[in-house]
Amino acid sequence: MVQEIERILDGLDDKDRKIILCARSEFAKYGFYNANMDRIALSAGLGKGTLYRRFISKQILFFVTIQADQRELLKRLEHLDENLPLRQLIEEHLNAAVDYIVENVDLLKLAMHEYSKVLEGIAKDELKELVRSMHRLQTTFWRRMVSKAMQGGELSPDTNEEMVASILTGMLRAIHAEIFVTGDEDRIDRNQIIERNTLFIHILFEGLFRSEP
Image 1: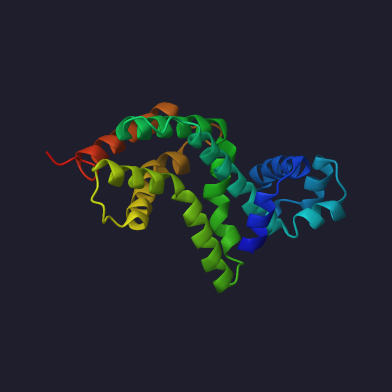
Image 2: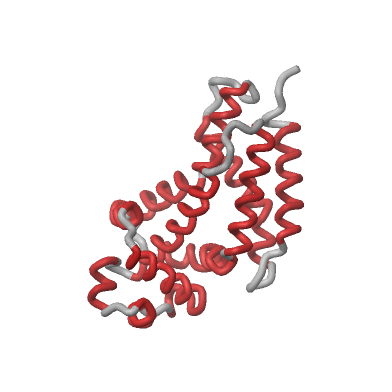
């Protein structure tokens, strides 16, 4: 499954992107189980056979929709100036992420509310592979930041990059979870996210990334 998802993501064309946009709307409106591939095909202006030739199952289409969004966010972050001081760089990245989250709140809610339901029907080995793949994608940003911190002396050169990136990803997710789960279904309070990001950065640079005197 992971190979198929990555194959599609690596070769997206305009027709695929149109399908993903239609699928995103369908999943957001009906949820995964009630979403209908016929409606998605009709909305995209395609025959059902064409849709299934490109996305062999609704499950595959769901994961491609979620991961395409995450890749788009990472692509935005890559355009920021990597030569900034570490703290400013992280602040700029998190601010850009806030903008993207506010713009795409429907997909964020979809990922949070439907993702675990879709995982229920996946075989154990495929599930492990899929979770590892998603985790790798989600920790991309923090692996870069940890590497930069190690190069700049804020972290020891023998730091376990993967472990620290995983911890930071989980911490930031936990800090924001309440807003995303209990907040308004149609909008996210930008100021609440920024406030929590500011606190997170303060904790980060007074602790983990604090340079030795």
